[in-house]
Length: 197
Length: 315
Image 1 (cartoon, rainbow over the protein chains, first blue to last red):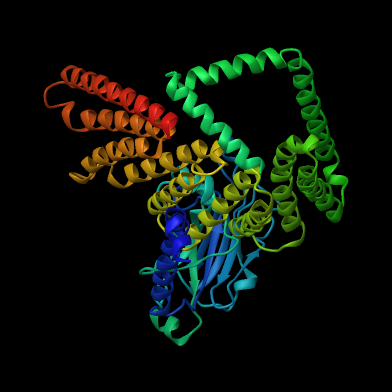
Image 2: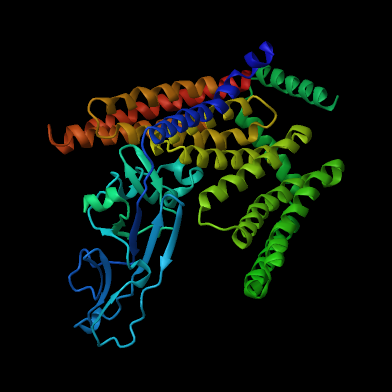
């Protein structure tokens, strides 16, 4: 055995080095998670939603009196008619489930619409950036890629995803569109969340 | 028995080469010349054979693509995974007959392409979720085992090459999922690949070592540069690293590593003069300094290259 190790020391170091680094980082990540309470509040987010940086956007998702409204204003310019309806999602971190809520169809594109999203009626909504238990909805970008990450690390797509983050601890949002997802609100039905409102 | 005879013959060749001061390049050129003389009549039939195989493979792939929407899920899996599995089994079987031994490499290549495709198709058809990274990690992990275990038995270089490729594919994703920052992932994986390449270089499978030296050293140097770029004064540490790799390339007898580390050093000198000296004494003077440095480095690299050549021959 001693002879085998001596003969193949470089090979063994070569194979164990990345595995050892993986174990160290895995333990560090798990430690961060174990000392941080997991998120309890569901988050409502939308993809394909550009109203936050464009006042001319015809589709809007607005929280009014703790209720989510879907608003549509006919675009004035003809060249703005390419706007697509956003997609709405709710992620429940307790069940680790993300489900899509279908937004109402726009029957007449020339008519204004203001509809309450019935699936979320009765839910207490909070539009603060940070949830009552301290989490934020963030785009997780883990640095530049290099040859190794692109060839063997799963590529760029794997290093870009949306997470609920609190300090060093983060929870991935499954099935989230990888780009342009926007935070809309937290669902805060617990007494703590209601108090934070 | 066969291996011992081959080793004895190689030892005799080396002794003869040393006695008559014949270089490795001269032997290579002579072998290539006689090889070409022997095979000159066969090249056309071989080329047509390769072209024919490529056309059959391409036509089959095109036909599958055209019919894809009409195929059921099990058919899709069978039509992609099936040929891959058959090619893999055939690749192992042909090793038992010396006449068909050479067919094993293209068969393993074909299976290395089709097996992961079939497995991804299977997961796409039957598995839920959008975690493609996890799927890739599992697929590459299974394939690494599938290629490396037979390698231990039959010792084919192509099996080692694909097995190690899949191993790195799976390991890299595992490291990424453990949330190792990209730069550290690149450094660790680059070092690991170089160490494994060093070991491969000392076996009968050394033909694939330059590829892994290249990949490992490029990955390592790229990642280290990502870490130190623009960080004063730590970015200067890149210089001793590249010089160290140039020197170590002589120990490893790897001209591939020498080439990569030399280009990394030249690139770093360009970065450093542009970053810190361009506005100090004027860009033209910086360029002249850079030119002298390039000449110095290239002369040193040529010297090291010659040293590697002589050491390889006398080893």
